[in-house]
Length: 88
Length: 240
Image (cartoon, rainbow over all chains, first blue to last red; front, side):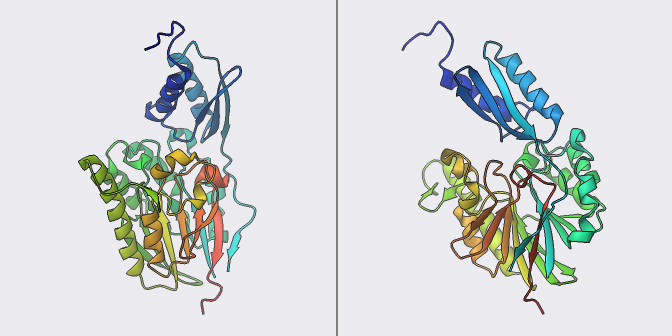
């Protein structure tokens, strides 16, 4: 087995973050994607409130302090629909 | 004509209270019923269910729901169901209801559903007890939906699930997780009855429109997919 002094392979880190997003009771999100870009990890997806978005970043940064993480998580709009779908 | 409003995956908790309400206040003007496609809460606690009851109760139109996987997380399903029912919300699980609407009798049969995958690429009832239990859960859930659909006497029939009955509405999700997002058995159940529309949630990164192998229109109404408080569908122009 190869030893890496710099920490676990990237894929295991990404898997751990993906599981944290769902299994951490303070997050409990299944719709957030973790993608590795040139300058670190990017979290994408949508949540129901700004507080949840902030909590995701806080929890991930706390658990993985050595990872450069940026967020592109949006808050889902909740306005009334402007149009209906006719299904003849 | 019958007007159906629908949304799923609203994941309510105290931090979201009030966000949907302004749009929901408009419901009586634009819909005869509101259907909720599960994942009403984050963790399925009684406290979160009270948030759902507050946000989606007393709307002036009937509200019918199924539960989702999140609503099972804390093993408080009986308490969650009671809170919802006390707020006048009808909770379906392998059952159905008929609503008298101005445009006719709307039948809604619902079940949470389960994973398993889609035709030719699905799990089988074979091998370890855990795998057989997984697949049998899918089979039993779909069978209950089919029986509920076929048992309703109505003018327009709608199927309501949390898990997806077709892969079409999962487009955008990673292919690898399709078996955790739905099962073809749900589609088969929907096709076993004269269903006019099938509504589901669960697939946050999926797409809105699909169709079952039998030709029934399917809509993914997960909130992150529709990006509005609810969608409204008009059906049943032909009802006398």
